[in-house]
Image (cartoon, rainbow, N blue to C red):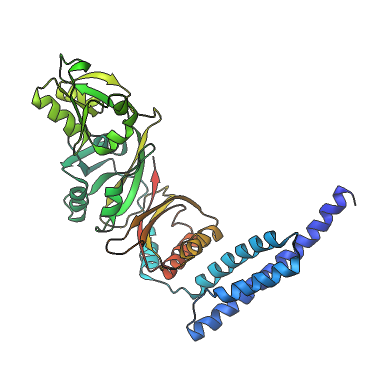
Length: 379
């Protein structure tokens, strides 16, 4: 057979495959109806193993591995379809549908915004990137930012969520479990760290460096090269710079933004001391009530899953079956439970698509608990 003849044969086989696949999915719908009558779960692992075993035997040794991969995909699609049929309309999807009708097309340029730290902090810079005319209120720690938004004191709050060099900001992820909020925007800010000192200070004078723990991690190579200098963690990079300025000492330095030099009367002894010059921190903008703005194309979720083998794989299978990209997966240990975790999903998708809302319904039905953290765009 020449190439054209082989391709024609494949086209014929593909037509048969599609017809058979549709028949199988319709049969899955009938299975879902039968399971609903008997109050049975979608997953039947024993049945799956038996089907795969027979299929592998039928395909022969040369194709058994490929056959297993094929059936793993078919099972994911079938379970996703059944879950969609069985899942009832819930409070989350009702609220999403209601809020879609109230979508704000333009993100506000003015607002009262909570930021952790003091003037000159990176959170303040991220805030000014998102809002043209923010009224910024500074707070001592991340929890106070959550509380300011939750109480209605501030309309929005800015929080760092991850850094390209140092990874996730665990303290913020842990606080997400304790507070009610929604993400409405995110932005990536280039982080350029400088070593700031009081005027007249020489490098040889420095005996201690102060900064936030994330900045310390991001500048670990520089600090390792000067391991004779004491390193002290501080609440915020800008607060560390202010502390150095107010101390008047010449034996201490701060790692902070170059902007803090002008703000607090310091000088840059060294600039760009971070490990990676392509150093970015992602900040999220949170608010109290579920709100969608035009262009929202990322969804964040927080889930707890049944503590059994395969539960995470099954949830990922639902995402894959709907053709969405999982852009981030974070896990955090659950307090008081040994080796059990809460998961954070970032999906590339929008609630303005009905199939995505259906996916959220399926995911919530399969999870022990699921919190919708927002649908938003990133600048």
